[in-house]
Length: 91
Image (cartoon, rainbow, N blue to C red; front, side):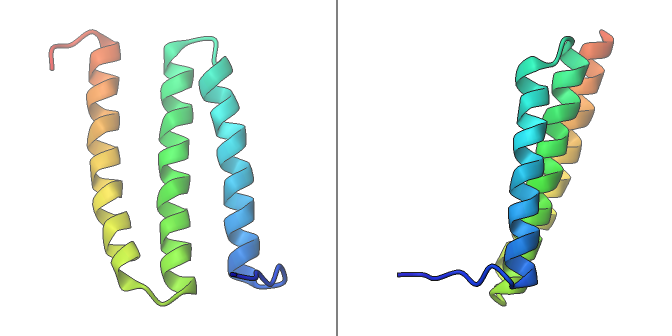
């Protein structure tokens, strides 16, 4: 069984990121407009990237940092495509 030391700065940061993800999820679910939902989803993507980097640093797993870099690139490209679509342009 894994035990967590809640005084560890990595665990505290990870828990704070989870709370921020829940707040952003509320924005995605309750956003009055589509751009609000897109911004909330992009915020969640950014927080997931930060969580992956924190996890990789906490447990000395470099692969999570590499995956976070690729995920950040894909998230950025997806956000550009969604913004172009919402603007009314062709993809």
